[in-house]
Image (cartoon, rainbow, N blue to C red; front, top):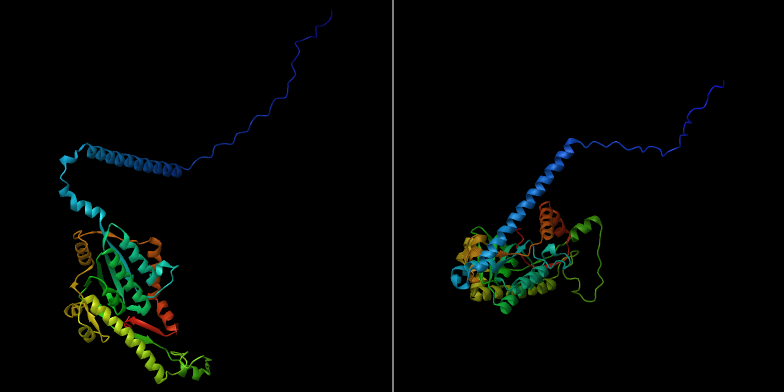
Length: 354
């Protein structure tokens, strides 16, 4: 008897694809989740707030459209309309007045100031211009450039100018202010110093001590007038004095014209001395005492838009930053060192007490 050895055949195992290995999820720290949720809530709250504000604006606009023109008394809102549209432009004039570089607007040189005066005076919403002055003066040409810009703007636009004096508005600062229709000063403001100065340094003695000698080859005997390497001759002194006298006469004439004072009366005050704001008021060099708010109110009244006017400036954040850096460097003596190293002669409307 044969043994039955047959059995059900076992199917062969077919090779299948290898099982995929999945990376385990990286757990997110609870602090990150908490911060994410917090920021999402903040964004959602701000979005909801913006929707609410937009709905309020739309609602007010719809209500305004429903009001008939005959139901509104526009005469009651005349002052409100002016305060939102018309304005007094404020232009700062700080530091020593120089021509500066036209490519570096933060230096506030005479070119930049004159440009701002022209631009502000041409704006329709500007009804008056306030010059916020805090300067000891500067070079003759730069001062006269700003002075001329004010006169031109007044002539072309008929808009009033008000000068406001801060700590100091002396010499060239006062020259500029004399072109304005009104001058407001603090009681303790330092002003005046009406006059001209020509600064020349002389290092001849020092050069002899260190063994240095300068020789100038010139086309004429006055070509190196004002040289810091030698003494000034009597003829050169006479020439320079004539320049100073002529510039002084221009200064006095500008003050007499702007302040509507007799020329001889101005000359009595124009011997270079300085005055406080209160002394200047007594000598008719300023019109009233007050602060910046008083000056703005006066400008608003001259511009026929009333007191507490809207203020318009062309201040730029970058320019403000650069101006602040310049002022800080001056505090650390950088400006003083630069001035000391500037050996060239300078004809200036400037008070050297600052």
